[in-house]
Image (cartoon, rainbow over all chains, first blue to last red; front, side):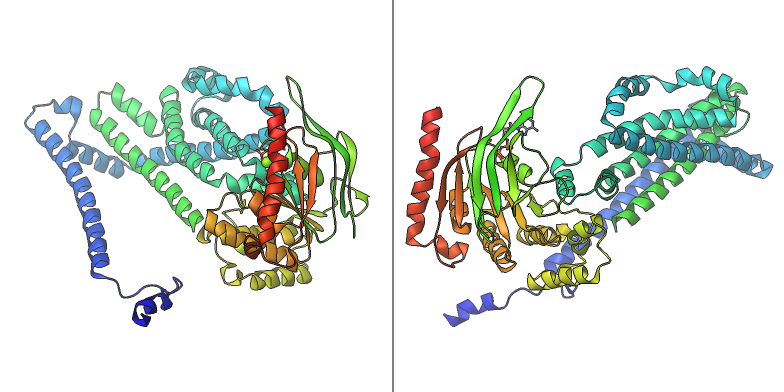
Length: 281
Length: 258
Ligand SMILES: Nc1ncnc2c1ncn2[C@@H]1O[C@H](COP(=O)(O)OP(=O)(O)OP(=O)(O)O)[C@@H](O)[C@H]1O
Ligand SMILES: [Mg+2]
């Protein structure tokens, strides 16, 4: 009898220490996880290589016209010559600057406006139809006006970038602010918190996950804004290069610019991801 | 002190676009100091409204509410409020959660208060978890943290709005015991809202039975199971008799209205 009861006395070790001796099944499980991860990365690289190889071959044997479809080797050559020419850094720098400034301005300004609209219910009601219309309006339609108002080039592109990002920023953040649990607000009030304290200690921290997802959306959107702005009017930047390549019928240049663009956008997304990971800890 | 909390013919109307909803009608009852009182009533009868009125979050349309012979005002810090869910802030550690009220009232530098926070954590077995985030705690522990957070502001009166209903039955019995123990040890006056007659019986010294909306007092039952814990009270032979009294008082009105 005592023998049967004994195991109950030996309570499982507290989880405070890290477990060291794992069971066979656990080791197997971990191994399978690792194998799965390696396989996924392998497949990702494999697909990339396959596509590039196929593209190269088809272009090489002129199954597709390399003049219109370019080819990996031609793109690489083009990028190399761009780097050798040195001007590419200027184009990349300008696009990056436009995007980052547009991104930061839109996010900050959007957050401030969302806070003000949370603060005043009346302002929220008044602004609602404007937000709805602004949100559904294709911002590129405003392009010509923007050029008249702020001049073409750098500033027009930044404004385009801000316009594209800011509305969605306001709407998502405001939504996160107002959907905060009413009982939590009541709790703060029962502790005699002021409205500002409720904002700082409850509403804002509560909206951080939403804020991070807004950042992620804005990375993509701000690049859309930059490229669109540069298409409309500019004399520098990757969007300009794409447009220029198109008019010169130099599709190698177009492809090369697109590749550089995706590297920059990917890098920016990576930074936001890093920020999210650090926030989570 | 007799009649520490007093409702004197309190009525309350909610204003909505279409009509006025009377949630509380001519409500009169009282709770003595250090007493544990419970409110039971049909759902939607106005129980939460009564607690909000007591906390000063709503102002009575007519009548008055007194706590310690003083009229309830908006900002007098006499009342601590505990909700159905613990509402711990996930982005704060346990320590930061329980000192939230101190922070709001700018008392978080006061060494006496901080020492009290530590003492409460130690006393109720949460000290080792003070740097953990709420999601790392069990439901029962979270409810204890919520109670300590409320106690930190040293309220003279604790309001509990179905604080256990989000817990599973077994945890609920244990947490009930815990919370009861803490409230009695800290010598607080408490007003609990419950759907559950057994729960109200096991915790209270006095039960206020409400009619359906608009809430008014149907019956006040004073209980006497001398000095037992909620769990033990459930086994007391008086328990069943009290249960029946309250059950009858509740249902008898339901028949009238339906
Ligand atoms: N903000 C409000 N505006 C209008 N009517 C309200 C409001 N809050 C509550 N009521 C109404 O007042 C009545 C009483 O509500 P209350 O929340 O006090 O009831 P309750 O007894 O706590 O209900 P439950 O048992 O569901 O917790 C209900 O009929 C409810 O619909
Ligand atoms: Mg309620």
